[in-house]
Image: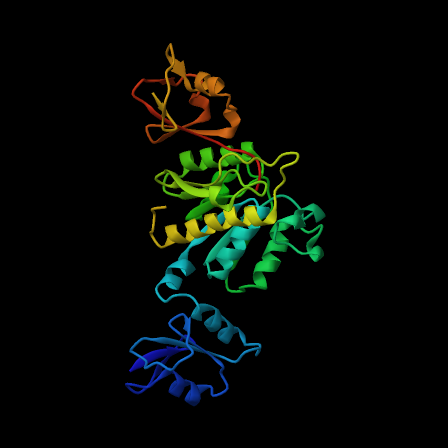
Length: 268
Length: 64
């Protein structure tokens, strides 16, 4: 019967087990992943099963690396995620976290848009490192993503988004994540996208400052293709700053909403 | 009319601009839908709301 070992088509005997295959192909592998799950006890393999064999700590070559990354993605899900192109408008606390989560699930392509550079004050919540200070955010985030999943296609756009360039910037994206800081920019982007691209999905955010309850951050479906994440009220202000945990909660609401849209799960 | 799920009553005919003012919301920070259709900012001043309209206003706050 036909199975996949490290994403390669291989013929094995009926009733072969995962550990038998491991002993034959890569005896030293201490991690055996079958259909997205790390198994501890041996299982009998079935036609079209996907098995990945990993030696802990071994630096894999590029082909093995992609197979290992893919192995934790549920088969059937990954193929669709790999085809998606997602635009991210603003690479601050929201955008940098959304990009990382989407890269980890093996998104096909990211369009990263920001005009700014990394500043020391960004490190309180944004996914950059000290070595990135002074670097364009698009460049710094591309560097972070490359070190997480080099198989994501990344297109960088160093520009300030406004009505004149929003349309051109996101024409390729299936879904756009609004991840700005400024409320006027947020409204402007959402208004422009909703009127110019009725076919695209937009996932925006509003209200995630402070250390208020986790559970007030919600995802709402405001229109057929317009989702809004946040508590609607907690504005970044004097005495109520943006902090890593709550911004990341909101960002990952956005990232999971993107994933659900890709997988055609439109209900919140 | 229904605004953000709540019934609200205005004495006279009211435009989107006037309604936003009454609600204390800044035009440049909102997204306005009437009967599930997005209304562009340029229309706010002329768009007169009807009693039967279902209005949804998203007012963005800063932070990201």
